[in-house]
Image (cartoon, rainbow, N blue to C red; front, top):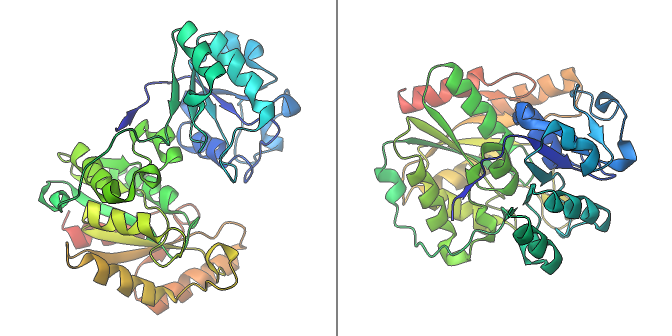
Length: 350
């Protein structure tokens, strides 16, 4: 099931967890859907200037509860965190009860499905509203057949040397850059936060393994008539825990081009001591060889995640990776995407 979320007046629920890293989902929504955010629900931070908590954000009110936010006419409450284990923190529950009682929709990317909670489900039905568990893909039973390669759309997949290295942000920034150049560019969401940002997609990590590549194929078919699409990558092909979803995206989307995402200084997968990250040149070769039997996709550029690094350190890392790979390299947030999008256009003849 490809989710379609029509809501345009969102309250982001962070109750006690508002922060750059503790509420990453909310932070991403503030970056990419700011015009659709009417406020934050967080009683512990209510009334504070949001800039004191998130330096790059301003003019977003923080409310103690749903009743305080109603004058701003919200249409949905979106759970703005992605905690380890994926359960709903108890302090957030009352906010959702209040939202559903007032007819607001609830959007959640938690592993715990809120629509299966008897109290919350009954409130949604009684007040004629909906709970959207965007991590629940519904009944997908599609076996991939390599059909993505037969579509008109040029397919660019972000891949990574590890998890959490900027694959979603890189895909979004590349789409923005492509649109500015006049290209008919789509962002294809494959995870819960991407779906919340774009308003549609499939959380492929919750699809049964036989059908994950088929789900990726469905997503490409959904944008088949566009000029180019940027597919949000997941996992890492050599990560022992999350390689399966990466392989499914490689074979399901049949990418024409790939952007390798990397975080300088990270040497272990998920900081697990027995899981070292292979050199980036080796990983580029692995991705190209794995996808080759299905479609001749090439890694054409490298996107670095240099958050927290000094400008000099970031510049040194960018130069080092560019020298190692002989590929255009940049941090899409720090440097912009000009060199990356130019490499894609050159490779795809756009």
